Length: 433
Image (cartoon, rainbow, N blue to C red):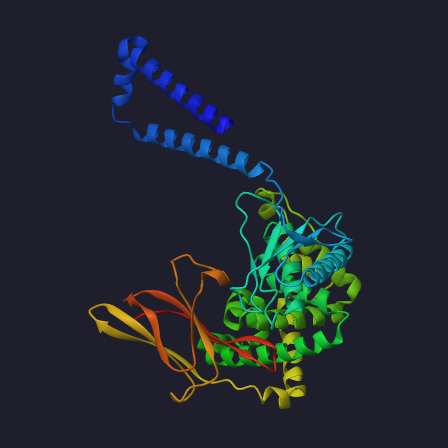
């Protein structure tokens, strides 16, 4: 690596020259002066200069263009925006998925009035479930790379296509669309674009959304703070969408967001909804402080395009959720919701083990998965890949011990046949004590 070697040698030569300059200039008096204790003013000046240098290097590094991610062995879209899909299984299946993703990108490009849609790459990952998707981190490349288990018998193709669109819009907006006040619009719009011409997909999403709304309403009723504030399920979704998404899991949260977006589109009209989506999801903001200081808030954007404010939207969505639950009550009654419990039990001293149980007794239930993670003091949204997993069919103990005061995230998930995806039955953040 000749450039890196020359840069290192140049830096070393400069530091050696600076050392000799300090030691030999003015008969060494500079070294004596620098060896004295600095005053508070001098400490502040040095700190500001160092922070300024670090900031300059950070900005320069961020502005350096990264090469696009390229996948050598892949099926590539035959027309439209470039999509590469890693081959896992029959090449025809990979080619079909690449063409479907390319068509979805073209539809999104037209809807959001984007001048061009950069490449999208999909990688096979057999370690994932059929309805679990991940976005790959690219420290040394640019673009959008998503992963899924293409060869799984339960692979949710439509769900993955919507996830790919949401990941692309999140990248395009420099993560601005993933902020909590507008994330539901991002998740719902991606599902809406994929399902708008597929009635069977809309029927399935409606059932998932009704189940999610019932689960969310029950959780809001169990919360003393939300009950006192008079917040229903829709109020929670609009005010704390990331918490709702964590509580429901990706499948139910995406369906609920789809229902909210379809309701908003029906109320204000598709033309005004398209203008709102272009402002929120179609603009690529500057990669500096102007994105936070100068851009309008989501509430301002809603008002600009004739949409109701947050309080009116919450009332509208609550009425919609109630009517949908009543319409689908017979089907929803067939979906079992067993009780879930997590308890911390002392092992001796300040160490605890965490026991979990699903159902009213220990006779065993349908297979389920326990997802858990230790939380840091500043942890916000949890990435799916950060959650550990324990599969079981009956009550058990997590394979780890925790000191008193440890903050944990725990959840139980299992596949529900009627909903066609993995459902998160219970999720919470709590402290071991």
